[in-house]
Amino acid sequence: MSFETLGLGPNLLRSIGEVGYSTPTPIQEASIPLIIEGNDLIGIAQTGTGKTAAFTLPMLEKLERLTKDESRRGKTRALVLSPTRELVVQIHDNVSAYAKHLSLKVANIYGGVNEAPQKKALREGVDLVIATPGRLMDLMGQGCADFSGLEFFVLDEADRMLDMGFLPNIRKIVKDLPKKGRQTLLFSATLSRDIEKLTKEFLYRPKTVEIGKRTNPADTVRQCIHEVTKSAKISLLKHLLQDNDLYSVLVFTRTKHGADRVAKQLGKSKIPTAAIHSNRTQNQRARALQDFKDGKTRVLVATDIAARGIDVEGITHVINFDFPPNAEDYVHRIGRTGRANQAGEAISFITSEDQGALRLLERKIKKSIYRKKVLGFNPSQESASSKPSFPREAKSSGGSSFRSNKPGGFNKFGGGGSNRRRTSQHRGGR
Ligand code: AMP
Image 1 (cartoon, rainbow, N blue to C red):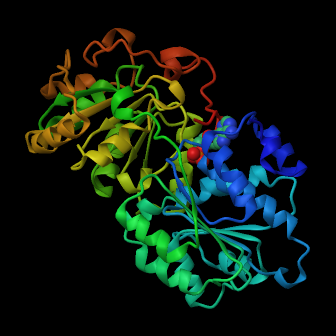
Image 2 (cartoon, helix red, strand yellow; image 1 turned 90 degrees about the vertical axis):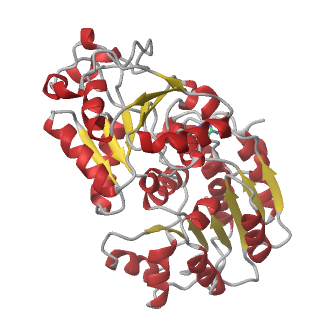
Image 3 (spheres, helix red, strand yellow; image 1 turned 120 degrees about the vertical axis):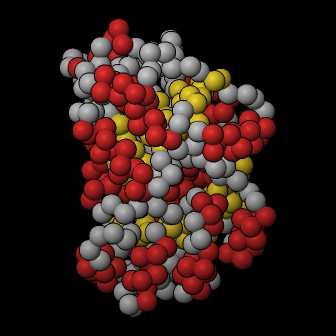
């Protein structure tokens, strides 16, 4: 199957070629023709399956085709709701690449930044709005948005939106959208009872496309546990980071405050680190993510919410500095590594308080996670483990034979080789 057979026009085919996609992923193959035919659609697919292109490509195709309709001129014709600012930006990046040869205007709407340019864009009229529910509600409340000409409404990551408590906002937004002439698409990683209810509320005779789940990261990512006291966690983290195989590391903490604290401590030890959580400004979050993608920072410390759906290529290790209380978050976190068939490793710090959550997790994923002793780690000798250099001989993450999958090998942060990552735009879908 090729993109040419899915009903997309020459302008889109050209940009698809330019971003380097040669064949559609299964979700794209199934969804694109159904959306072009005009169906409402329920797409059950996770991030990483190519679902963004699955809904944006046919939508852009139809927006381009109808662009001569006078009555819709100047009005917003498509609205995509997504749970986090990072996802909005990610969708926007994709849309910008796909729509390179189309003449459509697109606006991003999300909180944490000055609302004036967003208001201006909405007032002047854009074809497509990509938004988080909170800020959009604010701007709608101020009378800035006119959705009376809306042809497409997309709910992306619907299950996460419910988890994050956005349902009341979404209901209010949908109340102001036209029912007639609107095509609604809903994407979710799971089809829970709540999601089913939502589809009945918002969609009309929808078709359903369900793409087999990505391999469960709990089956493919190498996992281990280090038992540690609360107070020794930071020394253990610094100790592990002496190993240059930990090349691109996503560290999860439970709280925003905790994320800042860990980032500060690593910074003091001259380990290039950034933190990402919802208290940081949008600019700070965007810069932290970009620096991590570009390989300028080696460690990104994040809370669960900020890390939702983040698509960064080549994360070699996920470290659960704070063990997550539920199994779903654990699987989600460790799925940030080992993507696109690269090797990945997940390390969890377990204190006596985490033993209950660990037992529940092991029951859920039906396997026991390897308890690994950390060779050469002595929390009372913290200063010895906080040196900024990463000597190969000091390798001490318990004898891991894991090798960095980075071009240029393990000594990237000691210099040598290009450490630039490709952005999500140019990587193979799964
Ligand atoms: P998504 O599931 O939308 O987050 O997409 C995951 C990744 O796959 C993104 O980096 C996309 O750029 C990439 N991608 C999407 N469709 C294709 C395709 N047909 N061929 C190769 N890569 C793709």
